[in-house]
Image (cartoon, rainbow, N blue to C red):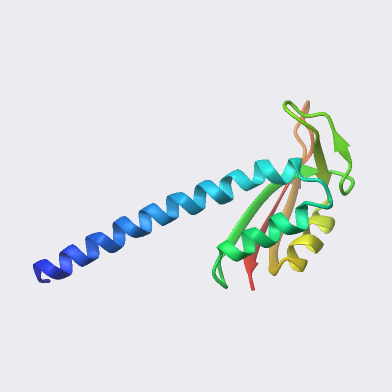
Length: 120
């Protein structure tokens, strides 16, 4: 490998790392935003996530499991429950295909759920 190729490879790695960190920050923060978004805001939030991802890109989304859109008091501001079925419908409407979903209950905590989806 030539010196020029090594330099190009390093620049690609650095560029990828910077973009990966940026996307991780944007999408990682999205889970926090999803729980606080009401039913009117959530479709546009999910559509924005879809625009950030290339076709075939993966999204793992965590949320509180419960009746769709039902509000509850949370530490900072009102949050909302979503069922796996309801969130699946919203994700599919935003351009994702759901791969898997799971719900979990831990004693003394609100029910949680997560969905793994692919941008289509």
